Amino acid sequence: MSETLPERAADAAPVFTDEEILQRFLRTRNQPTGSQTLGFRLVSVSQADRSVEVAFDARADLLLNPMKQIQGGYLCAMLDECMSVACMVASGMTAVAPTAEMKTSFFRPAKPGALRGVGRVVRWGKTIAFTEGELFDAEGRLLAKATGTAVPTPFKSYK
Image (tube, rainbow, N blue to C red; front, side):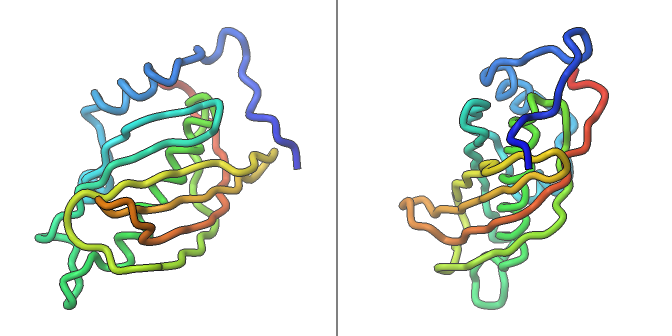
C-alpha cells in the first residue's frame, strides 16, 4: 500500500497549520455528543508525525462499571476517538476515517478523572489507514492500547 496521503487540488482545500487545526477543534460548537460524553479535548496536533494528543475527563457519574472503574467500552471509544482524529489530521483535514476494525488490550483499571490519549496513523494506504492509540492515567501509566484500521473518506470542506 502507498504511504501517500490523499491528494488535494491546489484550490480545493487549504493547508492548515497544526495550531490552526488545534484551535478549530478547541473553538467548535458542534462537538459530537459522543465526544462530549467522553470529556474529549484535543491537546496537540502533529501533521508531520500523523499524531494527536487528547485529554479526556472520565466522569464518575456516566462511565463507571459496578467495580467503580471506567467501563471498558468507554475506554475503547476513547481510543477510537484518538485514532480517528489522528486520521483527520494526517489527511490535512480532508477526510474522516470510519473505523473498520479495532483490537484493544487493557493493562490496568481506569479510574474516574483525567486521562490522556495518544493517537497515530502508522500507515496510510490508498483505501485503508492503520492506526494505534494509547490511554494513560494522570500518573502516566499505560491503561489500554489499541490498533485499528480505518477507511479514509474525503469530505468537501473544513471551514
